[in-house]
Length: 459
Ligand code: UDX
Ligand code: UDX
Image 1 (spheres, rainbow, N blue to C red):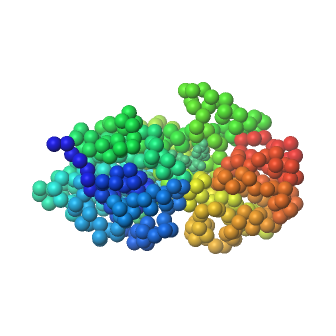
Image 2 (tube, rainbow, N blue to C red; image 1 turned 90 degrees about the vertical axis):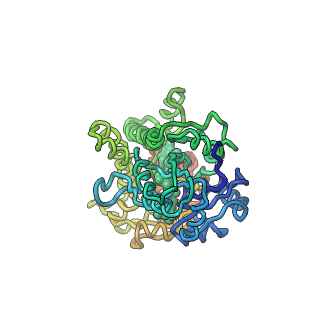
């Protein structure tokens, strides 16, 4: 008899687990969906009007399904739902290890392992365990060996179903994915999960592979995307010294259908919880198989990104540093702290490295962001020398320099003619996302430096 998944549970109510389960529940009203999390505060927020994750469209999806076939519960209460579930997704974080073997590179699987132990302890009958978290290739072996400790008669099958959503567009990405990937060993388990996605995803977009290919494909997809950003960022530096314009170069290069136009926006650097972590994981795996050249190749994508952030911070400092290179007494407005627009997420945001480098040289920062909370900014930067501004106008008051670090749409329409008077005379605007209207900024009598463009005519 074909397997049918009527009750599902998901451990981890984060940026991935919460929105993914909300969309499944929304699209499949007959499937009972429970999301568990160890963090009681997070669960309380998922049950409130003030969701813990900011994503356009998420609140509407949650409000349609929550209380109908979607619930958010703490870990203890969740045990009974895991026991009753036909399938359990693991969607906990897999950060880079900070200690032990592989520290600084390998992904830390301790949360995944503890989920596997939890599932082994509570599952009943036959349960499909689905890796949603990004895992190193062959991680399913480790999950399998933990599940093997379950009571006799309790059986499992493992699938890898990595998530490709990007923050800020998570709901759209979940509702209209380029592809859904399901890796596994047993066709009936793959078919059962595919049946859920088939409710709204065309069959030809549901790809099925072996377990190891699925695990590796997620890492490789993120590595390729990050590589494009580092590639164009490397060219941005070359454009600045030669007088070429990186936007023009990217448009020409991207017009080749073999290359394509997306993901060629030069920037202050890529951020987010995935790109660096997944690159480092790929590097570590390559090294551990003795593939030194492969590891070195991908390491360069990470290194270039670090260099771009340092380079950008130094460009901000250059016109205002004193003879000894100090920024003491200088106030710099930071417009945007999130790692990209339309999210409140600051994990690995390039703003952290840029700001820390400026603070280390003695600058005072006035940080503005539309969604990031003052607590998040302070927990990354500390309070010393850091002011969190409620509006862009407040951040700009008395600034010696300005840096746009997140491409929030509202920054693109700031009225520079009105704002110019708030800045110190001679303040330079550094556009780390190339979103400002260069002509409008120049008309306001201000000097603009963009990523990948030589000095502007009035600079
Ligand atoms: C996800 C993926 O799982 C990760 O592998 C991928 O690379 C990025 O996206 P994400 O949803 O962004 O992670 O992580 P996060 O927002 O930190 O959410 C994870 C949640 O799991 C947290 O709310 C945490 O409290 C919870 N958790 C963690 C548990 O409930 N149990 C645990 O044992 C560990
Ligand atoms: C990424 C992948 O896109 C997604 O498929 C995967 O599931 C998780 O990792 P995310 O990190 O949420 O998603 O956002 P993404 O849109 O990929 O942006 C990552 C970083 O690259 C951001 O800091 C963004 O500003 C930067 N970026 C992206 C650029 O600097 N230039 C670009 O052209 C594109």
